Amino acid sequence: MAGAIDREIERLFGKLGKLGWSRDDCELIAPVTLEINELKREQNAIVLAHSYQTPDIMYGVGDFVGDSYGLSVKATEHPARKIVFCSVYFMGETAKLLNPEKQVLVPRRAGCSLADAVNAEQVRTLRGENPDAGIVCYVNTYAEVKAECDACCTSSNAVEVVEAMPQDEIIFLPDRLMGENLARISSRKITVWDGTCVVHEGFDVNSVRDIRERFPGVKILAHPECAPGLIAAVDFAGGTEGMLRYVAESPAQTFMLVTECGLTDRFKAEFRDKEIVGTCILCPYMKEIQLDDVLQAFKDPVPEQIIEIPPDIAARARRSLDKMFELEKAGRKLLQERGRGKLPWTAAS
Image 1 (cartoon, rainbow, N blue to C red):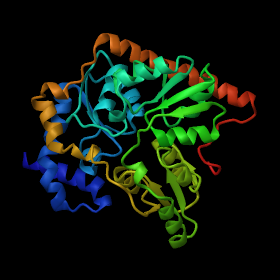
Image 2 (cartoon, rainbow, N blue to C red):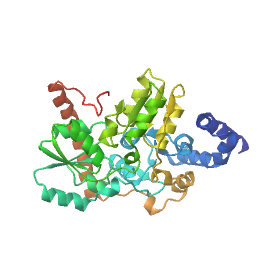
Image 3 (cartoon, one colour):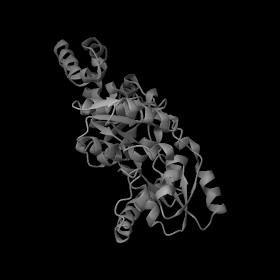
Image 4 (cartoon, rainbow, N blue to C red):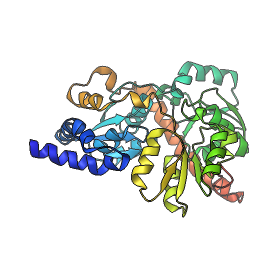
């Protein structure tokens, strides 16, 4: 056993040492990560780690690291029969919607300021009050909300989905700021719901200007959940995968990420030849999840950790997700026909 622990310490240090972790730090968590990784093999399971998780989860036990929807899709391509999703609860629901035959667990039933901002009854009321409007929900919503909407979207396909909706007026929920960014570039009339991400609403355009003054030539990346004024001031706005591609392909050496601290850690670990500067904001919901919670989910899961979605809600929520793909393809074609191509969140994208 001592040999296995020593090897685990070295494995962890090889990954976490890049982020300032010492060997002593790695020694503290090595027994837990080793046990979790052994249980994964025994139970034919994988761990999905959202990019906002802490480094010990992302690089200690995560089999795949990424954003919520991309990880759920990745799970459909993997033969594992069990998924432990280190994320907030709605992301576990999305994984279950796409992998209904698999067991899906979350280490904690963590909330989300966006997902908690709207419920199914409110969507039904909206539809009754606006019978001619189409309703599009960001993927950061609970399954019961997805089930009441015409289509879902992600930050990477929101423009295409909205442009391809058959209605002239679109109600976009729950993210007000993303909806305002959509309204700025879309041809549709967009009404927004008043929800926000506690992380991204906390950033101010003045921090962008300050970083530009301090680091000439810096490239600044932001998520479209930020305020429109900030989005207009950055070099690129988009989801996690778009940010990864931008940094990988850019000749620039210095970057600021206007996003959650976990993603900043990820970029520092995966782009060691680049300099990541500036500030970040912690997501209090994502940071609820600890390694011990992951271990407990494997050893003795309690009901609140096990994702179960009523069949009727699951079927309607999956239709909303399926509609997203249909509209994304149609929206891309529409934009090409108009000679506009991919509509960027920012002029510099």
